[in-house]
Image (cartoon, protein in one colour):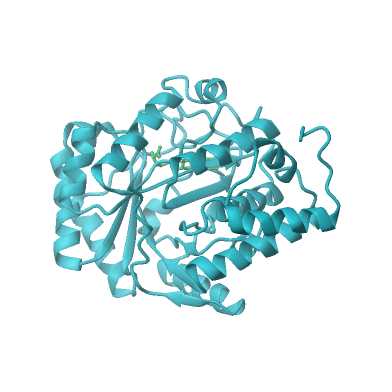
Length: 356
Ligand code: SAM
C-alpha cells in the first residue's frame, strides 16, 4: 500500500484498528495515513486506544510528583526556554536540602513516585556524587520510586545514579530525523541521544523516551518514523507533548503543534506499545484546557503534577503559559480530573514494564 493510495472508509479504519489491537504493529504507510487523520476519524483510533489501555494497564492513573530542581543548561536546544543562550531567564539550582524537603513534602501529600527533572546542568556532570547523594537520601529515607530526567551522562554516571536509587530515566529523542535533530540541536546529534538510551537500557533502568509533535519542518513521514522508533526502542514509558513556541528562543515565530496531532500520537503509542506507561502531559494541558482528559481517554495512564516550590516554577519555563498552581491545587485538580472520567487514582509506584 502506498501512502498516496491509502484512503480508508470508516469501516476500513475500524478493521485496521482491530488488526492492530491483535498485532501491535503498523506499517510506515499506514502510520503516515493515521498521523493525518481528521478529527472525526481520529475518534475511531482514540476509542481503540482507550480499549487497549483498559485491557493492558487498567483504569488506574498513576500520579508522580514532578520536582524541577535546576534550570541551568549547557545545551542549545532551539525550542527550549532553558537553552543556554536565553539570558531572559533567571537561573537557579535547588540546594540538596531543598530538593530533599520538596520530596518529603510530596511524599506527605501521598505521592509514591517522584520525577526529578532539570536542564543539562554541568555542575552535576562534574559533581555526580552530589546528585547521587541527594537521590540516595530520598530513596533511603522516603522509600519512594524515583525517575530522573536530567539529560545526557556517561554510562558510568548512569550506573552511579542507578546505584544511588534511581529506578527510571526519561530522555526523549525529540525527533527521529537526524537532519532535523541537528538543526534543532546544533551542539549534538541524534546518535548521541540514542546511545544514551542504549546505556540506560543496559544499566537496567525502566527507560522512558518520546518526542514533540509539530516541531518546525516535521513531515508526516518524520511523524510516522517517530512512532516506529518508539516501537523499535520498546521502552516502558513514553512522553509525548506538542511543540509550543517560546518567545525567548530562536523558534519564537513558529506555529505550535496541535492537540489533535498529539492525541493521535498518544493513541498510536498505546497501540504499538500496549503495556507502556504514557503520561497526559502538561504541555498538552497548556495548549488545550481539556487536553489531559482527552489524552487519558486516548491511551494515557499517568499524570505528573508539579510539586516544585512556587518560587522556582516561573523560572522553569520551557514554553509560555505554563500552568502554575500550588502543589496542593495541582494534586487536587489531577484527582478531580481522573475521577470525573470514571477512572481511579493510583497511589502505588506504578512501575513501568522492564524490557530485556
Ligand atoms: N534536560 C533534560 C533532557 O534534555 O532530557 C530534561 C529537561 S527538558 C527541558 C524536558 C523536555 O521538555 C524535553 O525533552 C522537550 O521535549 C520538552 N520541551 C522543551 N521545550 C519545549 C517546548 N518549547 N515545547 C514543548 N516541549 C518542550
